[in-house]
Image (tube, rainbow, N blue to C red; front, top):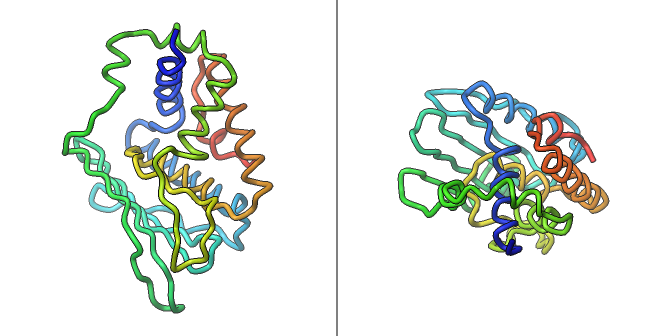
Length: 220
């Protein structure tokens, strides 16, 4: 089978097993464990405030390891199509926050999704069987480590080329998890996390099992 087809099915399988919590309860649990994992992974002094639910939306904020960078996120739980936004804010003074940009996804507008096409052709089992370790590594890289389409933060925070903000990610849980990796300031942890994620998804694919939120949020 063509490598591109194999990797397309791997991509779909990894998103499905790790980044599609179903229902309000699982989505809240996913975000709660996500926030708790941030403290040790970024080596912060305290845990982020837990996310809150209001009017059908889950909202939360993260103070990043870069002292002047903050994130606000909001995920809709009631819309027929997913809607979420992540705001990147810059703290120029202790009591001020300025919005740098917003990653905004509104699922009511048409966007091509490959999942129905792949599912219609029903080659997922064959593709996963034929996948090699190099295919799993390539997909983890593209999903989380180094998205092909990405932006770099040039200012006002100090420029760090290794921070790559994926521009085409329309899944809120994948986007937030991707930021967990990208905004980690400790190079040794980033390298260990990359290895951990490749191994985690390789085992899940080989065993045809899902990835629990606790496994996903484990420390490298």
